Amino acid sequence: MTESVLVAILSLFGTLAGTLGGIVVSNKLVNFRLQQLEEKVQAHNHLVERTYRLEGEVELLHEHIKVADHRIKDLEGCI
Image 1 (cartoon, one colour):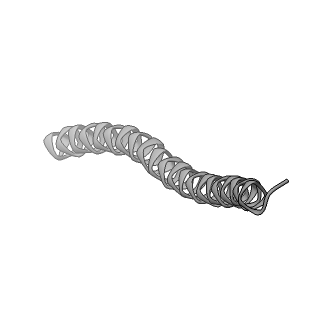
Image 2 (spheres, helix red, strand yellow):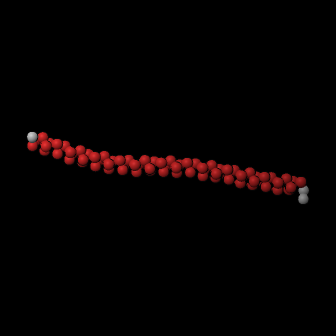
Image 3 (cartoon, helix red, strand yellow):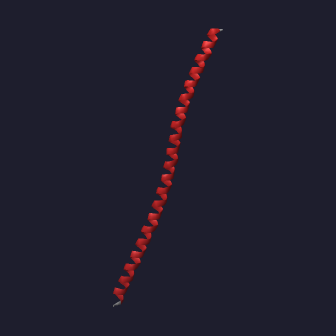
């Protein structure tokens, strides 16, 4: 084999190794970023669920207050 062929083969292997290494590192970074985004989405969804639950409880409390107001008005009318 001539020197130029050997250099070309070594260059090919070096290029392939560098490219594959870059792909692996880039893939790890993308996976890490996706994991971080998934955690943020889960936190947001948890917040939305809690908000809906709180809105239901507030509505129930408003109904209790209305009933209590009517009872107070009825008691004031009896006196």
